[in-house]
Image (cartoon, rainbow, N blue to C red; front, side, top):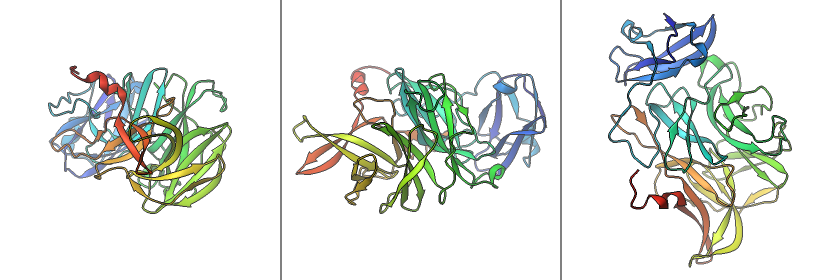
Length: 392
């Protein structure tokens, strides 16, 4: 099927429960998209593909979809209506499709950037992209277009962001450096490769992302994934989940060349590692002036830790941050001074909607001393205090 790109947005029909079909989209015989979509003749909603780079061109779409499905594929100048009276007011949701892990969280020039794992083409997990939204207050979010697409290197799994204020990577002071996992295990397009961590930059404050072939962290073990970068003293560190309950730590002076310095196992912990240095508060309220490193993983399992720039260690005691399995894959925002702000994904089904999953209310992390023990304190960010008695 040939599609003249007369308008920016390509609407692709989705019939929930229909057989999952592979759809390829090419421009001049070069593959642009490789999509898995529930393709039926009776759509429940329309998914959206942004074709801005191909305006005025003709694309070829192919796949084993029913004839009635192709009849409903068309270009439009706007998004389809995704109004849902049940959408929450305080919890972020994507317009259409599935969301999971928050990615690339950063505050830059007063603007908060929430990237997230996104399947734009269905309400189930598949086709991992990075969606993107921005906010000035962590409360009101504005949707933008997809930030990262799958390509020949793999689908866009989870990752992180950090601002290169000192231009150590050489792309310009203030450039945002992102690393994400290019996963090859679930994409035919890239099945001949191994999963790796790949570099992306933004020179315009996070609005547009540019993939580069520099700085690649090659395959280490298993489906090694979920890079989280932080700065300590004059060096940069990348936490990486390897396999089962194994994590590794890499070090860099320039955000491009990475050296593994340590690998460890932690019982039950897996995926989405983060290492944060938290202030300690006493039971009666005031901060004590102490700080304590905390290692954090996807299920909210956390370990009181020590870190000196060369060696990481924990006391080996597992603590649980959540009372349920609803929150998952929390990541802290980069670019925040004097606060540690956590964003979680909420594993909600949203039955009957054209989207699945929500983001939790952003929360501030501290430690509280309770009966001479340190416990994690998770509290809604102060920005929500302004909402008391107000309409949003």
